[in-house]
Structure formats: C-alpha cells, structure tokens
Image 1 (cartoon, rainbow, N blue to C red):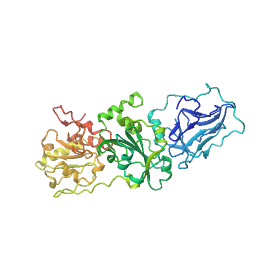
Image 2 (image 1 turned 30 degrees about the vertical axis):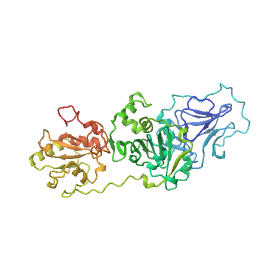
Image 3 (image 1 turned 135 degrees about the vertical axis):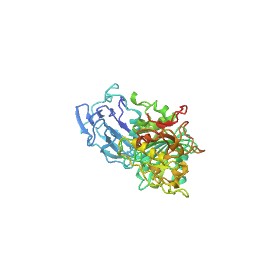
Image 4 (image 1 turned 120 degrees about the vertical axis):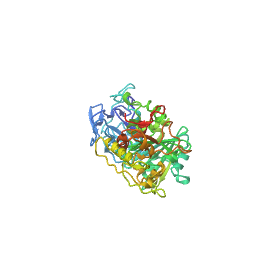
Length: 490
C-alpha cells in the first residue's frame, strides 16, 4: 500500500502501516506514522489535524487495521490492540475517507456504521492535479508476515484463530474434514459468520488455485484429519499472544512437524527438507533466513504460506466464502487415552524425569549408572525417582511407553536395558514419546528414529533441553555413518 496515490478506501483485512489514505479530491489525508503510535487525519489545505486516533497501549510501530470482523482498530508493535471503534459484528464492509473530511465505515447497503465526525463545514478546495500529493513513504513496504497478520489476526480478536492450507483439496472437501457437511455449509461472508457465531465456531474455506485456505475463529482445531491423502500446514494463535501458539504440518493423517510454545513445549520434525527450503525464501532480515524455529513462532503465517506454496491477499478472503458454524467441542483437544499398564507390569508414577529399569542382571552396574546420571545434573536440582521394580524385567519400549501416565506432557522416556548396563559409559535407551514407529500411516524423515542412546551422564542435559524446546530431538541423533552411535555430549 505504501506509495500509492489517491487511495481513499480500505476493505476488511486491509490496513495502514507507514502509509496513508487520501480523499478523492486530495485535500484530506489519514496517515499512519512509523513510530510513536500516531494515526492522524489532517486537512492538507489548512495544515490542521482534524482527528488523532487514541493511542492507549500503542507504542513503537503502530498499524491501523480494518479487521475482517468489521472493527477498526490500532495495534502496537506487539500486535496488541489499543484503540478500537467497537464496530465488530455490525456489518461494516468498507472504510472510506470522504471529500468532506470524514472517515466512515459503511455497511453493504451504504449505510454509515461509524464516523470520525470530522467533516468540515465548508466546501473542499478544488482537487489536486493528477501528479498531486502522495501517501507518505517512511520506509520499505510491510513484509509478508505483517500483511498476513493484519489480515488474519482480525478473524476473531476475542477468540483467537486457526489458519490452515490444505493442498490439492477443494473447499467443500476441506470443510467436511472439519465436520461441516451438507446443508450446514453455505456461501456467505466471514463478517456474517462472525455475527452469527454465538456459542459456536465460525469456519470458512476459500479456494487458492487447486488448494484450500481454511479459517476458523478458535485457537486450535485438529490438523491431522485435513491431511488425509495430502498435506496440511497450520498455525494457531490465542488472543493477545505475541507468537504462534502452535505451528504444525500434517501429512496423510499424521503430524510430522510440530512447534508448540505453550506447556508442555513441543518441537518435532522441524528440520524436514521442505521446511528448510521454505525458510530460505522468507521475507525477513538476512540473519533470520533459514531459522525455522523463529519463523514458525514469530512469522508463522508467512511460514505456513511458504511451505504450502500460496500467498493469500485481502481480496481472496474479503468476499463470498464457503462456511458455517461448528461446535466448540471440535476445538477441544481430545482427552488423552486412559493409561493402563500392560498385563503383569506394575504402574509407573507420573513424573517429569522418567527412568525405568528393565534389566536386573547386575545391581552394581545399576548403582554405578545412577551415580553417573546424578553427576551429569550440573545444577543439582533434578528430581530422579527411578522405576526400579522387577516387574519391568525384560519389558519392551512399547510396554514402558504404554504405562507412562503423562507421556503427552514429557519430551523423553529413559530406559535402562541390558545394553545400558553393559555398554561403555552406560548407554541408556532414550525414547521420544511424540514419534510413532514407522508404519503405513507414518513415514519418518530419513535418519530420524524415535530412539537413540546416550551415556548416563548426559541424561539430565537431554531432559532439560528437550523439555523447554531449547534443542530438537534431531540434535541428539547420531550420524548414521559414525562408528559410535551413542550420544556422549557436544
């Protein structure tokens, strides 16, 4: 939008950031400044300021956004909302700067939903010449993430959103995978869906070539069902959160990449080749190119689009959409499966650091292994209550995982088997509970297995770094060509 002349209107999903609108005759300018949180309407003929958008909670770089929900608002540089016109759900579909000096929001019938009330009481001066005043250009055009954020953050400001791209699937099919079928679907607009949402969740689908863009007014919806036979890429965001709550990619019904900032933190599959290729083409500062984690967290919308191979605009979503309302229960993550220890095996207590002994051939080696593990706790504040019960003798990793009651909340499970007790430096088996075994429904990235071995003195380091997503599982996997396949530290 920067540098455009005589643009006097915005549609939902569009915004001003270091740019301006000019009334058709050229006399009035609604200008968003780069810094200081200022958005002002000025009379260029007299040099007077007619209206300054209230700047509460607006600092640093600001953006004036006409949201998809019909609200006019100002954000600060953390994407937190300051001032709002309070017009969400009232049918506003056009913002216009008039030759009378008013900023107005109009509904589909041309009625005024809101006005700045700044119309001057005398006729405007004659229009500027064709080469007249242009919108201020105080810097480079906003990057792709900024444009996409202005578009999608206003989907449901009070509820959060989910945006997904499903490749090679029609809007009708995509909505069906989120449970919206038959007569529940209709051709409508996002504004109408928001006005009718009540205690349900609005969802809408838009065709982007052969692919489908899905929008939902909830901070989480399941991604795996979207990807049956194809690929789905998704970002979810909670209201007021300065980063993506969850970023994920799903392939043929399975989650293959997942970055979650909430608790418990998750980071799996973020080194897949398609993610690395997409990250190299991001519209970011050179030192951030290729930084997959930063892009997924801080530029998640752009990263979704780059991975999926689309780049939607306000025109794509600011018209007829196929959509409807789904139950709130759809946005509630499924309850974890009940954990029952395999027959003949004792229970495992819920704890953060899970260490299970499955070999009872050498009590001396077991004691030495525990001593080495405790020495590896550099900060001395780790809690280790190993599961030392002969009922686990000879158990397989799958049996152990099946009995861990909080496996969805932890990053690792450590198993002391015969190799761990007899190998050099006690190479404990480390299992990633997030990664399933290879099957017809899940094909892991080449070289990425769900288990590895690490010396006992490295267990607490692995546990701590994976628990806070300070490192990725792949960071600990050995080079398949290396003679030693045990992780012994960096």
